[in-house]
Image (spheres, each protein chain N blue to C red):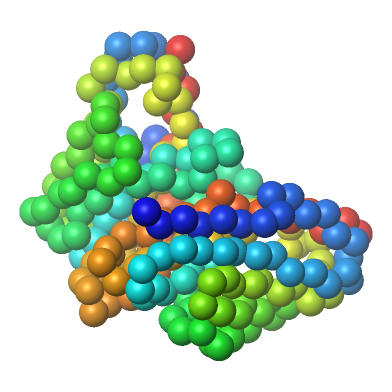
Length: 110
Length: 116
């Protein structure tokens, strides 16, 4: 059974204080790892897809990386508007649907 | 661009009542999905439709039915609502559910459903 575990559950940062969120997974034959951002009262918003170990993608202050067992979402010099819940999901070779982690709630204080 | 539109945004039901949640997408996507999101549980797949005319069960299908009305629309029905179905329901769509494809899913803003 696919397992996706995100840590920490919640993270509070000061504006400008860089940190990383973790997504560890156990799937047979990863075909894609997805990062989403979810604001309160809204649906998840797609950020990145990573396909293979060693791959990296960046968008503004966010950088996602992938290894064979986990993915990191690095947040550099965060701003209050980066506050949101970040979700990780995986798709493996035998399935086409996604398995989601429970998310990390990020709060960035000014 | 509307993307994925869900109606209604909020609803309160009494136990035993029935209701249909509506979802429409304007991105010409083949695949559509229904999820529920509960505190501490994350997003769980209820049903999905790989393409028009097909539907399949997800992780938590009990108590729900779905209809893929056409390529744009995918509805979720609660025949006899129970308090355990109190949740936020999200609809999503993607370009393809094929093994060769790996497109992200795009989500609506959800329906917040309370069952008393």
